[in-house]
Length: 149
View 1 (tube, rainbow, N blue to C red):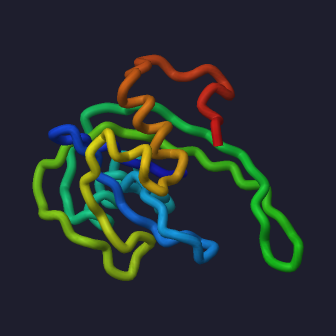
View 2 (cartoon, rainbow, N blue to C red; view 1 turned 90 degrees about the vertical axis):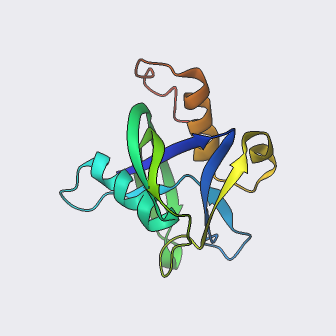
């Protein structure tokens, strides 16, 4: 389980940058991340955004839930059946100052004009989140409809 925020301000989207796990080029991601044991998803997104960007946010709505299931490689030729559930929240900045995370899963945070996002090296969840933000479905997706990764 993980929770992520879409923060759009003045036509710009707040993103964090994550080093690629395979040593490739870094990828831009929505600020957010994994829930700690016993943590409420709302509290997760507040904590993660502050950790990764320096900003404090107010959640203004739940945009949707994305579920993905895929087989991931492990060491020694073994694999794991991974099921991820990610909550996507809309949020607005209420305080703090932009800064980079030190010693965490991201190394940078920045605002990007919405028109420039398609040119960024980004994870698929950025596009899923932007689609939900633009369409504002208001109702849960049908099973399998959001499983696009």
